[in-house]
Length: 328
Ligand code: ATP
Ligand code: MG
Image 1 (tube, rainbow, N blue to C red):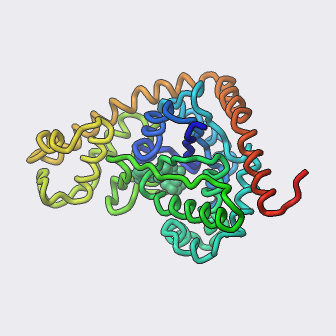
Image 2: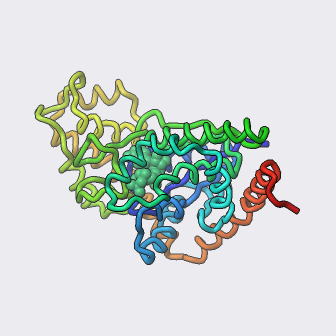
Image 3: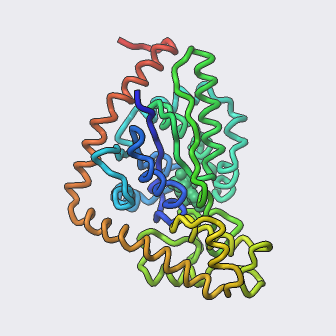
């Protein structure tokens, strides 16, 4: 059996360059070496309130962006989580083997729940659903950004605990992080990771931002009190801009150092903006093409669903059998 790759993005807002560099760019790069499944994880998005009309639209927009960023639907499956009932079904079975203390330790739960007046149970259960997403397809490799490493570790723990309680059932997945760009920071607050759900106007460059807006956001990025790049004592804002440049352009560290050492911040930002814009423009052009034909996108989603649905059904049947639940 070919090794499977699984990964997802929440349709919880505007996809940004952090999502691209941490996840989508690598999905596109490795998709042909594996059997790949990429998922719009809408059930994850509703762990914090989403406006229903906007969510509906963001699901389609996210699917189109996957394709615009280079996911090849002839080769990879692009699916919507809520279309496949087995994600939620398996999540319940895994919930029952997951100690609550494992979930309360998660840093994303602590960070996201701190921002809520009432904390929905879904926010705590989030990593169990994520484990179910991955284990449902017996994925061997999960390409994600660094912020998801802890959840991946938990998915491995859940798989191992299930396997030891009920016998070998799940493939224990490996995490695959990009070497550069695994954690892109907010442009306005370089001590926080760039996030779709953050609210600052200059926080993130959206993949679909108008080009002028993208340039302005980069030109306004927080740097530090030095006037120019000093490699040995670089603040987090400057390091972030250089990481963005290196990840987009696949530039190694010595080359970047040669290019940027001693450069004034205004000039650094101009170079970073030009690099980002050069990579964003073709993505936006493909996105416009794809969304001008809504039938095409529906076709891709349906074909993908038909391809993966038997895998999901087979896993849930096996899990039910292992646990002694009712099967025919
Ligand atoms: P939200 O704020 O709604 O959680 P998000 O920006 O964190 O949105 P997710 O949908 O949670 O995006 O994550 C999708 C993928 O993008 C994951 O693989 C995640 O690790 C990656 N990712 C998210 N933010 C970054 C970032 N700042 N740098 C690199 N990768 C990131
Ligand atoms: Mg996130």
